[in-house]
Length: 393
Image 1: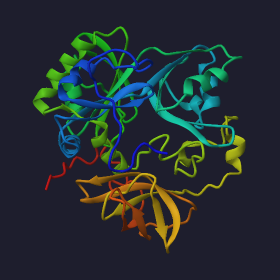
Image 2 (image 1 turned 45 degrees about the vertical axis):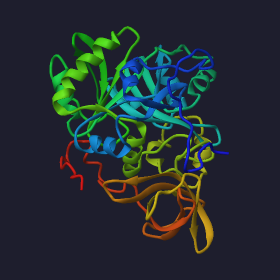
Image 3 (image 1 turned 60 degrees about the horizontal axis):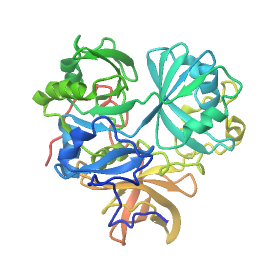
Image 4 (image 1 turned 60 degrees about the vertical axis):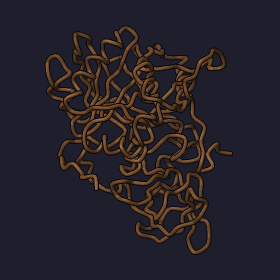
């Protein structure tokens, strides 16, 4: 059973003592977070802050929407290098990786042979034969190793940590922090190498919020303490603050950004999850292609609007019959109502369909299905085309 009952949850908190945290990894900015009272989840065997005693979830949400917020994530970058790196990744991912040019990112989905989803993440092509894959939670390393046995490619853990700077002022902060100013060009899903206080750092125009933003990659050779001091100084005039995953979670639901392992898993295909646009069926063979050729192409994943907060795992009921389940839920301070994501048992339910939704207080409330994203349908915010900053009522 799930550890969450909708009212309580189990998180990791730093405390005195030693032992029985074997295998867990702290990111380089753990000591920066410690004074703020962090509470962590375990993600890729790394600690990622869900919340801080110093900042409420709602305040963190508005920090993201109105200024800029930073999350030091648990994403796990793997490095693929060698003459067969492209060939291996093209086999592992549903997209045509041969089309990805150096200096660009791509959203990478990997499937099992039966078409069920294994993991997702951001693939960075740093050169002809060198890639990083910043994966969501999941055991992709072993999967990749198992399929590389006959190929000339080295798969390694380069001990890299990913941090996100997101919000309306994010690019202003990058402009202030980079020794040479904002990279040009630096369009959506671009990669650049900039210097922060003399240290060369890889940055990408990506994020998990659909807000204007970027991510930076702290490598093992970096002086992380000096790097953070430099970024913190650049961000101070813009009110930049650390925030937790709980605040980001609200925004990612609004944006229709999915979470591996909850919104989709091995039992769902990319089509079930509405990710069919990331499947290139005309490319050469990839793992899962045969199964996906005959799989249903309709989407079963949908957004939710509700009077209360949907409870993850609770039923979606139509005409007194279970028709789906909640995979994500929150209260949106911007939309002023409960929001969520649901996986329906069958495709074909129209947006605006009236449903009954199980919520965190144990009761069922009236709601409706809604297309994702819940607003900014064209994704103009993260591309800098929509710059209106919402008011906090």
